[in-house]
Image (cartoon, rainbow, N blue to C red; front, side, top):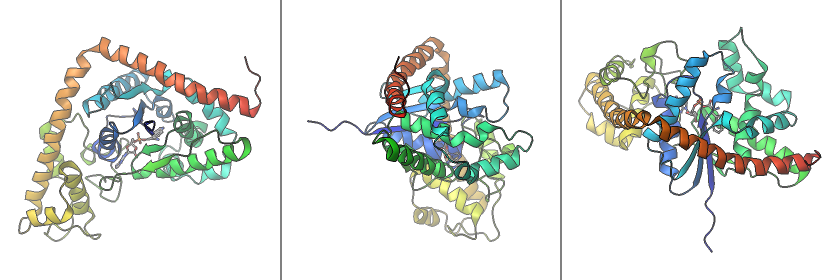
Length: 332
Ligand code: TYM
């Protein structure tokens, strides 16, 4: 008999337009894995409200991200693509897991420390317990693999710790997931500050390349990208700007760092930055064309997300019922 496919789950917050970091660190890998695995991908809208966000903007960005998942190459026939808020089991399991997650371990989360430093006037409880909601997302589907960028690996680790703690008390309820980060592109840096990650919350718009940016803006941003002293195109630690651009170039066209060094031997930063900009702009133009096509068919998208939420709920519910039973809740 054929082995059942292993399961994958991942999500992105609709707190801005999907950028090159999220694409190269996560979404690109999702596309590569879709034939081999049983995949669940969602729009992490529950996670998005840990930061204040205008309701109309949240709705717009969430729908945009949904269409972008498909435009990036996720086949809706092969993947279950849904909104987190459409599957109420996420919030329910998150509460249960909150009661099995320790204050001390949440306090050690790098992302919590970073985000609370940046949003000092809104350090809400949701920001603090964010990792147990993320653990619920993963554990509800008994996921084997969680493809994410490097900044999320600590959250996958705490998810395993929570699952282990729960399993030790109640038996094998949850499958232990593994994080899956790409070899190249797991940590794309800002174009204006190569010591910082490219992020949706970055203040300077020139640091981030969004998937829906216009071609000339993309090229302009790369031309202006901060580079290092010297003039050679080399992949070394003391050239963080060039290293970041080489990473992007390699992730986009599959060339190795040695091949890139050879390609630009004797050429300057200007030529290199232009080549990276053009290769990214070419990649994005394909995604954007598909995005425009898909977003036009609102009925198709609505039917898709409804059906997917039903499928996701069915699986999530099985896990949640099991959890409720194990912890001693009375059955309906
Ligand atoms: P989010 O929305 O911040 O980022 C989405 C995905 O993109 C990756 N990523 C990057 N990778 C490389 N370089 C970058 N500069 C970069 N910026 C972002 C992130 O690592 C992530 O994989 N908590 C998650 C969303 C989430 C989730 C989940 C993920 C909620 N529940 C369950 C996996 C499983 C987040 O905020 O991602």
